[in-house]
Amino acid sequence: MLSRKAAWAGSLAAIVLSADVVSKRLAEEALQPVHVPHDVIGDVVRFTLTYNPGAAFSMSLGAFSRWGFTILALVVLVVLWRTYAEALPGDGMQGAALGLIAGGALGNLTDRLRHSAGVVDFIDVGIGDTRFWTFNVADMGVTQGAILLALVMLRPSKPPTIPESVL
Image (cartoon, rainbow, N blue to C red; front, side):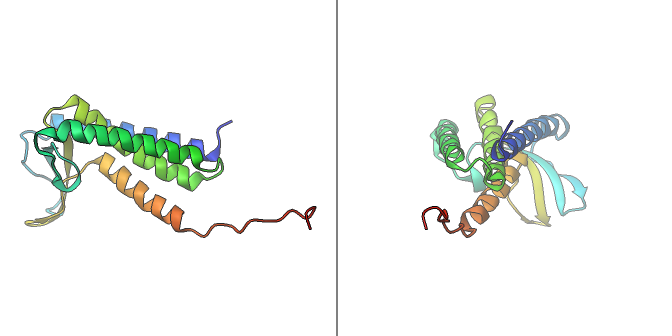
């Protein structure tokens, strides 16, 4: 039987990765040509196909972006795995956080390996010319997972209990 941690981590990683891959493929098919907005909820939410060769917020390593961020993603996945391995089996919240982050990291890593153009982004939110960075389902998983992980790490730990046999 799976631990609560494993169930949450595995399920959410698979859901985020699957939703990300499917949504990106649909975006590439339906949102041509690139950089042309398609209104979803008026001007506030639009789908606009773009390719980001850099990382979050258009960070770039120049000509090394694709492989540099690929290596960085692999390092992050190793760190996530180690954090997962150290978490208690019943810690479903930490498992959920790590699963969301891992699913998102794997989704964007898949794009980096699949496209030399970069990661597929298509969710475009804002008002008029004031827009947030275009993002994707993987980015949502990473962001939500990071927020949840921060909350998990900030929660008070239970004080150690002393068995009555010692007293």
